[in-house]
Amino acid sequence: MPRSVTWTVGDLVVHRVDETTLPPRTGRRLLPAATPQAVAGAPWLRPDFAAADGTLRLATHTFAVAAGGLRVLVDTGIGNGKTRSDPAWHRLATDYPRRLAEAGFPPDSVDLVILTHLHTDHVGWNTREDGGAWVPAFPRARYLVSRAEWDHWAGTDLDDDHRQVFRDSVLPVRDAGLLDLADVTGAPVEAAPGIRLLPVPGHTPGQIAVELRGTGRSALVTGDSFHHPVQIADPAITSTADDDPALAVRTRRALLGRYAGTDTLLLGTHFPPPTAGTVVPWADGHRLLPEPPAT
View (tube, rainbow, N blue to C red):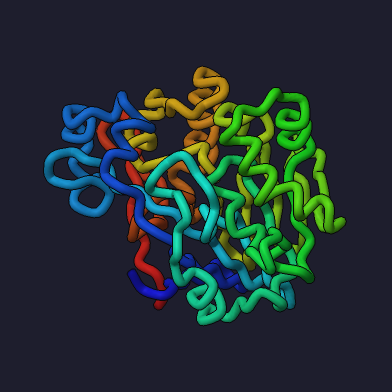
């Protein structure tokens, strides 16, 4: 994979900083209704988003946004050296920090980290290991999550996997005094100039998407409201990780109704390259029309 690729959104610059590709079994486990037959019904998914046999391609990455004088990260992937039950995520050793620095975002330069939700593969690089302890990876940054998301997990009896994630990737940020909560329940909330948070519940109760509003154009970082472009073709395809599958479908349909046919750039948090595109009508539904990066 390239170190990073870049799109311009008006006066904003968005870099996709890759962490890792996910193994082929991920799609089958996560989106079981996305069968080879379902994928064949949307031939535009191949070859970029699905293999010839219908296997879905997925990835983890961060969107690093230069907005005015601010450096903002949206989601932080799986992380290195974390104890995880999923073998594909267990004790990774990627060169993500170098990729991030090469994109112009060394750790001390980051001002804001926005977490779309608090699942394992979105919070891992919140922290790094230092002398046997987990410490914030971006020590100058504020870390922002929706209050509804925080309250949901705070009120949940966590299983062992989630308890471990909070212990090594979430609580150290809170304990360092770097965590902020945003009330994102109705109208969009401005997190920084040109950056708005939108409620997109269903996958988790407090999940947010991130709208980037550049001069003359906007983009939307999806979080897991869309795991894969197959859910643009058929928004009724749900994820086994959805907290409320029916609500997730309603959220997806609302987003398609809002952004389809516009020039808003959709940036999929798990979409493999080419990752970004506009939503356009296709057959009796929609498709993603990829937009090549500037670099």
